[in-house]
Image (tube, rainbow, N blue to C red; front, side):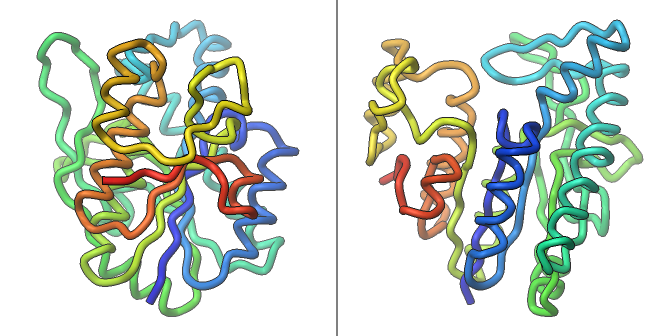
Length: 255
């Protein structure tokens, strides 16, 4: 059995035009599939409207108690259910989840070291049995990055991490392809030049590019999670945009 996990984020998920293109392409992917989404820009916008200042460190959101309320509303509510409805329109029997639903993804609150990230979760367990059962029955799971700790506390968890953890857990039983889909055509040598896509990238070169400032901010956790998935048996990890889904473009991660 083959399962394709598409993680969609950035401007793609929050712009109706690009989201529609992505969902059209997603619906055409053969075989079983899972969609994992973020929604950070919408959360940042709503936070500002509510007078809550968004704080980011190296592409990761600081989540205080008020911010947790906002991201839960946006990720598990507005964005998730909009995507589910749009997939139903495309004849995919989609079902939306947070990590707390059916105990799919359990996390622990990130310990304070140099930075206090607040109510941010680090994944400690993934239950894939229910997901596999649903997929085998023809359902298409849509997973948002809200998890729980088993003691009633919701936690904001990086969506790239959610996609990677799901891919790693599923890879023990099925062949998994993981695609990080956002507004850029791949990992770029020059952030201002969309033609400078790095077609293949290994971990050593990634760290060199990170140290030299070529790869920065939100791309860092995306690549960290992508390489973690490759090391744990995920067959293929690609970073690309909606066009790359159709032409096998983008950046392919290598060991």
